[in-house]
Figure 1 (cartoon, rainbow, N blue to C red):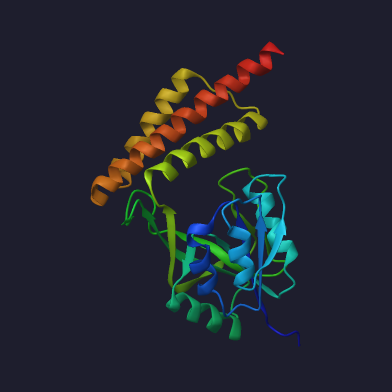
Figure 2: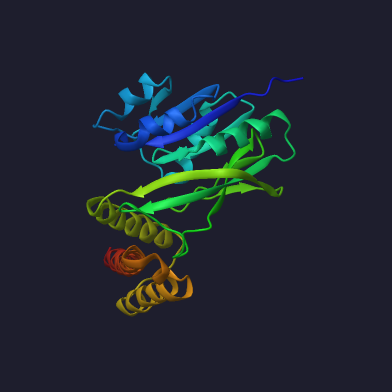
Length: 254
């Protein structure tokens, strides 16, 4: 029988803030591959210091394709995909090892708990957040989406005990950077799919994003952080459709 081995796939770009903790939390893995998109903050050096294989890939194809590059670079029988700002709790690490010792599924989902500017979020559409991340080689791949990629697979995913701690937004500067990056990527993705934007769509969709996050998804229970997340979601959607409208205007003018 083939030996059961675990590989960890991570993509990075200027991810030094939490990378060491991330890598330490999966020190039990047999192989770690980091696909780096041209970091200038010591990310690659941190990864190598923790035993990871670092591969430079600066031609950014989007989150989905970049994650598939990391998956393809691994040689293990099982793959755990992580973001550089995610930390595997000891309980989750034990659950992963137990699952691989006696697998009962090809894909496993983990329970991710995310923070926003220092606050752990338990509502706002952020939690519960069961995401498939552990899978047997050949049974799953990431979608080719530029942003909001997803793991694509055919069999049901089983849930693992423990938490995946996600330090998603450390400060306001990071919030603003991601707002700009995500709205741009979302606009490009929709433009490629033939969708159109307008000021009216931007205003309407943005307002709906706030209502959905703060009221329907009970963001108000997360206090000030919940209100900030609702505003962030609204602004991301608003600028996404404004940028989409601009892309349409540029295309028509050519």
